[in-house]
Structures are given as structure tokens and as C-alpha cells.
Image 1 (tube, rainbow, N blue to C red):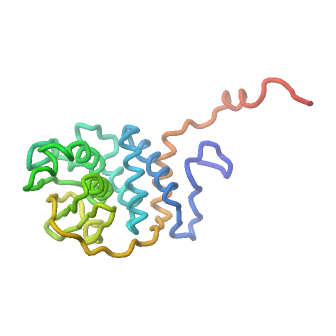
Image 2: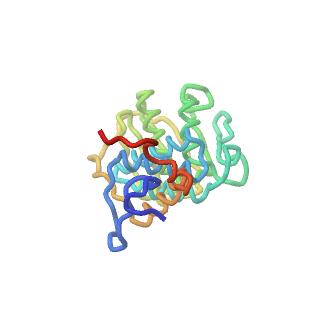
Length: 238
């Protein structure tokens, strides 16, 4: 439990019960998502990627915080061998029975972007199954920007286009609700028809509360010993 001025509190205070949504800045979402991912057991590097992805999606009008929370709950306590992709030319698969984590997948795709095992292959990639695949979009936007290409992410129920200037369009709502799906990633010729950027997406009170609970695991609560040693050791009456 935290009080109004508790120094262990992580991020903005959770709103009262009568408030259903709260508007955080992109930076606040990034910070909260990073700490929550670390609290759920992610290494700091991946946790930072996770927070950045949540903030990027919110800036595109998508519920990145909610998608991140779902992913953290699914993969809580699982290490890299359980969530990483097994890389092979043309087909990336999960290491076991668990779906590939989109954060681990996105980071790996960025690492392999210029290699034959990545999207350099003209036939593209079959990847999956992948959990919470909407979290993959920020990484694909970075690859598209870096390589100045148009990417297409497809699955059985739709497609999403990702442009080199960070634009996204397509079946975004369907992708947001998809989970544990097989993906097709490829380059696409031509130019996309882009929608105007959406407003920064607010997050639900429940999502914020659960992310804050995970973020609190990165803090060390105060103790009698720490409180007794706080403050100056001598008086200063000047």
C-alpha cells in the first residue's frame, strides 16, 4: 500500500474508483510500462523496449498499455529461452509450447533486419505463433524507417501496413484483439494510404492499477532501520 507522499510509489497515482480512464503523457506511459515489465521479470533492456512500445502505440491511438499488461501477465516469470524466437531463414518459430513474446521478437527482428534470416529475403517471413502481436508494430516501424521500405504484416484475418515515416494503417482493431497467431511479414511495393494520426490513447484505471502493482516490485519499501537513518546526522541552525 502507498500513501499520498510515499517515496516508493512508482509513477502517477492511480485515479479514484469513479474515474474509468486516465490520460497519461507518452513519457509517463513509457516509464510506467518499463517499470512494470521489469517488475514482471523482464531484463532491463527488454523492459525498456516494452515501455517504449506501449508509449508508441498510445501515441497512435492504440491501447499499448493494455496490450503490454496482457503480455506481462501471460509471460510472467518466463526467461528468454521461453519467449524468444528460433531464427531460421523464412520461418521463425517459438522455442517451445509458449508463443513468442512480441517484445523479444521485435528486438530480434531489428537485430536481423539486414541479414538473410530477416526481411532481406524477398519471400518474407512466417513467424509464430506470437502473443499480443500489436506490440510488434513499433519495432516494425523502426525497421521500415531504417531501411526506407514499406512493410506488410499479415495474418488470417487481416493485414497492417507500416511505412518508413512511422505510419500504420489497416486492420489495426483486429490485430489489437488478436493473440497467439501466425504472422506473415514481407516487404511491399508502392506507397500506403495513411490515416491522420490519432490522439494519445488514455488507459483504463484497472490497467494503470495493475501496471503500478507490477512496477512496485522494483522498489524497496522503507523499514524502521532506513527511516531511523534518514536525514542529516548533525544539527544545522545557521
